[in-house]
Amino acid sequence: MLPRLLLLGVLAASFAGSQVPTRRTVSLVVSNGIVITVDGNRRVIDRGSVAIDGRDIVAVDTVAAIAARFRGRETIDAAGAVVMPGLVNTHTHAPMVLFRGLADDLALMDWLQKYIFPAEAKTVSPAFVRAGTRLAALEMIESGTTTYADMYYFEEEIARVTKAAGLRGVLGETIIQFPVADARTPAESLALTEKFAKAFAGDELITPAVAPHAMYTNDAATLKACRALADRLDIPVIIHLSETKDEMKTADEQYRATPTAFLESIGFWGPRTLAAHAVHVTPADIDILARRHVGVAHNPESNMKLASGIAPVEAMRRAGLAVGLGTDGAASNNDLDMFEAMRQAAFLHKLVASDPRAIPAPVALEMATIAGARAMGMDTAIGSLEAGKRADLIVVSMASARQTPMYDPVSHIVYVTRGDDVRTTIVNGKVLMRDRRVLTLDRRQVLAEASLFADKVRAAVK
Ligand SMILES: [Zn+2]
Image (cartoon, rainbow, N blue to C red; front, side, top):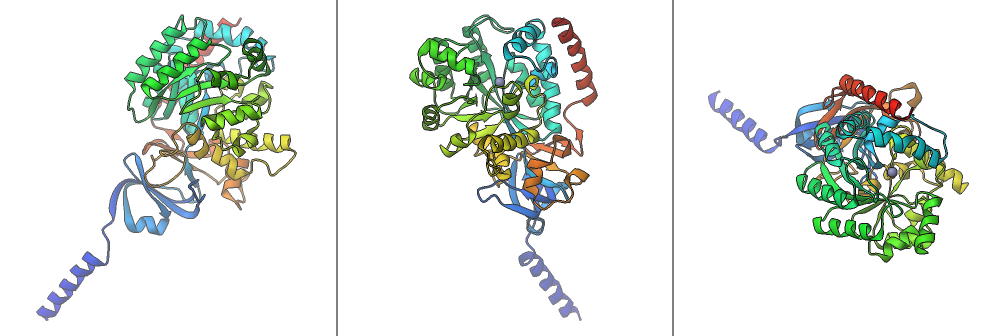
């Protein structure tokens, strides 16, 4: 009997060695979800899993294929839920959540001059900006945004709060010709930008940017200095572009050009430049933007609420421009919910084109993920679920009455899902919210702090 047992032992050992492959242990497996990858083939896996190790996605495949190759030290069961890339908000002013609902339904200049500017002049401080960014970060994590582009004051404070909350950000200190909360001159803002850029150089989550407010709020010398600084530090540029008819009029009166053509004439356009709005761009402007590979942030809700106009999104997309979606600041939206931005973008462009085929659901989803990432020059790292990319993903419940039944998950993400349906948010491989519990911010404290600042805002506009 002994030799036979030995033989069996040898056989078992060789079976274990050659037939059952060793499973690689990874930090996290998000398993058993409906995986919407937004990859090059727009693959949707009915029962799929995502294997994550450290900050990176290592594999996206069927449940069985991932289970055969990987063992997660931690597992998140996404049964019945959608697993998809985290949303990319290409344009906001995070701390402005503290002005949410302060004044609505006013003409743009009344709104700015009677409410927003006085409130900002009396309240914006490093503490205000930190409190506002914490509130914005809480809202973004709770509604599935994992990366955002921002332009405000005391941006280095915004960066610290963003990093502590675990979000990814492309963040730019506002550069503007008149004195503001944190700088008396554009030269001071440029110096702050450089200091901020050096402090966060090579950071995993924070990409500092140069952020001239707009062409009509800066002179040519300042705009050229912004481009020069971005080139010297090799960092992105963020600017508002052709948002209103007034801006077009100003550019025409001052320079006999559109804002886009004027910026082209001074050599402003360059790589990794993100233009917010592009509402009133002409076909010639679109050619310039396409030639210069400028990314565009489309903000349908803000553009509608402020009656700014309708950006020619379809024409820009046809020209090959990367058009992402943004919420703009919460004072003109009034929230940071990117699901709503997708839905409003789809509805708005159907209406304006008199064609229900305009911006179909897969395109709206693309704009909120991979196209937004491309607009920000980050599409090799984020914007889709693919091996080798950063693990920025969300798990979205599909269990509500509103979402039942479900024939097409992509349709549901765009046409019925809301930020509140997000269960779990992961950025750079780290779980920021698990089953609606935010792990990187103290929710109660963030909300309490926000109401303290709201009292100050109320007093400022009395
Ligand atoms: Zn803006």
